[in-house]
Length: 393
Ligand SMILES: *[C@@H]1O[C@H](CO)[C@@H](O)[C@H](O)[C@H]1NC(C)=O
Ligand SMILES: *[C@@H]1O[C@H](CO)[C@@H](O)[C@H](O)[C@H]1NC(C)=O
Ligand SMILES: *[C@@H]1O[C@H](CO)[C@@H](O)[C@H](O)[C@H]1NC(C)=O
Image (cartoon, rainbow, N blue to C red):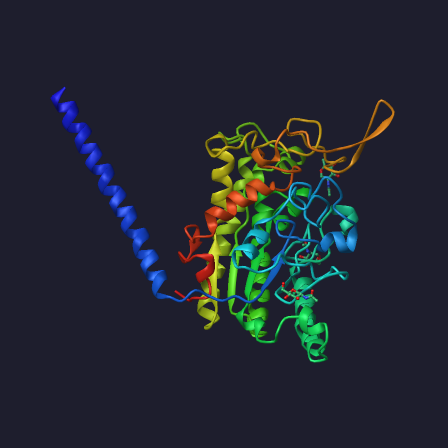
C-alpha cells in the first residue's frame, strides 16, 4: 500500500516534470517567435490539386456540381468539398480574401493572390488525358507557366489603371507573398492506376521531386521568397484508393487503411522533406516551411471519435459499397431509382462530424480541424507558425 502510494507520487512527479519540459520547449519556441516580427503577406499564390482547388478545374472542365459547396457557400463554389478547404482557412487567418482560381475568367479579383491549383493535378505531366485517367492536364509545370504569365500581364494591366488597379496585385506583392503548395498525391495514385508496382512507383519519386524543386526554384527566380509546402496525406485511408486498388490480406492497418499506399506516401514525404531542406541551402533568401499534413490527417482518421468525428473511412456524399463510394457514380452524380433519376447526395446525417466528403476529399469540418493543428507551426519544419513563415530560421 505504502509502496503503491510512493510509486503513484513518483509517477505524478515524473508526469509533472515531463509537462514542464514540454511547456518549456513550447515557451522557448513562442519566445523565439515573439522576437521576430509578424509577417505581412499581402497575397497568396497557390499551386496544387483538388486539396486546394478553389475553382480551376470547374472553370475549365465543368463545374463540381451540387451538393458540393452546400455547407458553407450554399451552392457549388468550385471546390470538391461541402465547404471550405485548408487554403481557405489559410487565407482567412492571414486576413486575405478567399483565392480566386486563375482560370476563373468571370468575376475574379486577384488583388491579393491567385490560385493555380486544379483538381486532379500532378507534379509531372501525365501521358494520359483527363478523360482517360481523371488526371488534370494542368500539372505543376503548367501552373508555373500560368503564374509566369499572370505576373507579367497583371503588371502591364495594372499600369493602365482604372479597375485593373483594384483587381490585380501590386508588383511588390510577388516578393512579399506566401507561395503555398499541396501537390504530389496524384502522382503516386496515377502510377498505381496504371498497374505499376510499389517499387515502380517509388522509382519515379526522384523524378517527381526534381520537377517540384525546379518549379520552386523558378518561382524564386521570379521573386518569390516565402514557401509553405504541405506534404501528401495518407492516401491509403481514402475510399477511392481502397475501393479501386488491390489490397492483399495483411496489408490493412489497425485503423482499416491500406498500408502499402500509406507507406509510399510516407516515403514520398521523407524525400520531399529532403529536397526542401536542400532547397533551403540553394535558395539563399528563401524561407521554406515543410508542413507534415500527413500526420495530422492520419491522427484525425485514427482517433476520429476522440475528436468528435465518426466513420472516418466512409464517404459522406456517395453511395454503395463498403465505403459509400462508387467509382462510376460519385457525389453529385445521378442514379436511377424505381425509374426516376436521383442525385447522389449526402448520406451521412451531419457533414460536420464526417471526415471524408466524397470518397476522395475531406469535409469542411475536417479541413478546419487540420488547419487548426498546422497553423501554430507544431507540424512544421522548422517549427514556425503560419504568420511567421516569412522568417528563415
Ligand atoms: C511520359 O512519357 C515520357 C516518354 O516516354 C516519359 O519520359 C515520362 O516519364 C512519362 N510520364 C509519366 C508521368 O509517366
Ligand atoms: C478586390 O478585392 C479587394 C480586396 O478584397 C477590394 O479592396 C477591391 O475593392 C476589390 N475590387 C473590386 C473591383 O471589386
Ligand atoms: C490494370 O489491370 C486491370 C486488371 O488486370 C485491368 O483491367 C486494367 O485494364 C489494367 N490497366 C491498365 C492501364 O493497364
